[in-house]
Amino acid sequence: MENSIPSYVLDSFALLAYLEGEAGAEQVSSLLALAQKDECRLFFSLINLGEVLYIIERERGINQAHLVLAAIQQMSLEILPADMDTVFAAAHIKACHPVANSDAFAAAAAQQHHATLVTGDAEFQALDGIISIIWLPKEAKRK
Image (tube, rainbow, N blue to C red):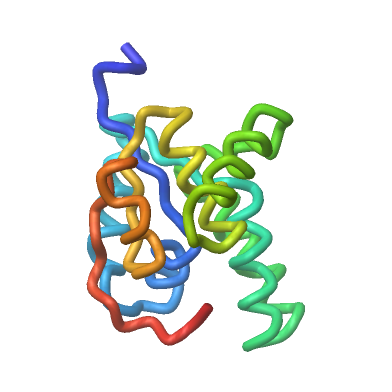
């Protein structure tokens, strides 16, 4: 049954777009709604969670980071651990492609779970054809 529904991995760009109401928020919201109804699986790497939290804290403070973490924990996201296999897979992606370390974890999650990555981060163009990607509009200004 698990393999009969589509699987997606959100990267930090996608989740931040959703949280901040930026371009692409509607697409992420639709995926979250599908995941809530068990019509898709939606993954998010623990490493990307750390990235989202440090960006929120840097921009809005620690209290807002705690609120965002609480909100994320209520979402229909499967938070993936950074176990040894995942670390090795991400390291291999990082060694072979010009992507940020946290992006390598999102890409590794997509590979490991046979999922489509959801992002608007142009850095993933280096992995186009290696993983399946849904491109969100590019409005975000962060990295």
